[in-house]
Length: 82
Picture 1: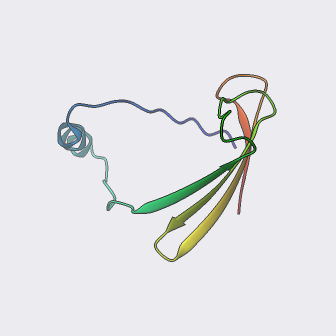
Picture 2 (picture 1 turned 60 degrees about the vertical axis):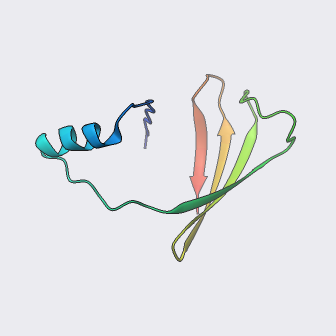
């Protein structure tokens, strides 16, 4: 599976939500997530080929572990989620 993630800075989230609703999108409830990220060197968090990140995400009573290894192109990585 290929996942494409886009991030944007917005001035008004309410305007975006109103627009999406008018376009027929269904907006879910707000999620409360707590992420803890582990890296091999806290002083070097640059994403480079071969770098590995582990993330533990807690969302309500669900806990998820994510392993990410940076590929040879920026923003291209292998991910495994448990």
